[in-house]
Length: 50
Image (cartoon, rainbow, N blue to C red; front, top):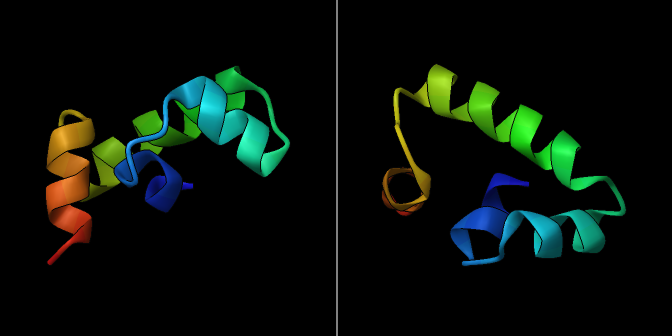
């Protein structure tokens, strides 16, 4: 899921790709941000590219 967002997909596009709701994407993204210590999609993409 983080990879789909890091690829530049919106929450809605990622939800369609993964067959879940956009709210599910938002929920999991907030948990990913917290656990990785990032604040937004840009920081997430940078973190994942390391």
